Image 1 (tube, rainbow, N blue to C red):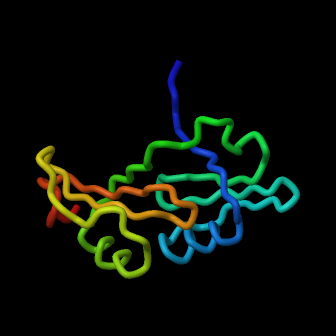
Image 2 (cartoon, rainbow, N blue to C red; image 1 turned 90 degrees about the vertical axis):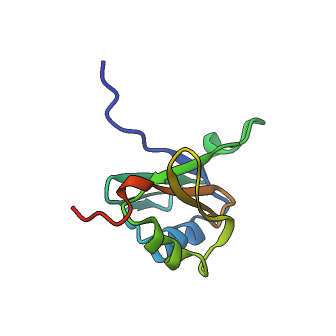
Length: 125
């Protein structure tokens, strides 16, 4: 058996604000939206995320305690774009594990981290 993709469905208190954040701040595209289901699907490149106000996505006492880590091909450019548009979790830096990365919060409070291997910085494909 092969797993072929992971497409998280995340709870949001305000689906309209979430769509605005992901499309206008991060450049995602709205794929589909269903107001009856209080659900939306968005994508950017190979990343797909869904947001919902359905009761089964609502916290069952555990809550989400992690973050979402995006590998990107130009972390410096993305940092320059997002540092004044978002609430910063941590500023850009190079870590001992040879990743240049930073973290921000989305409109729901989810932590979004963006990183690029140090040996890929400045390389064009």
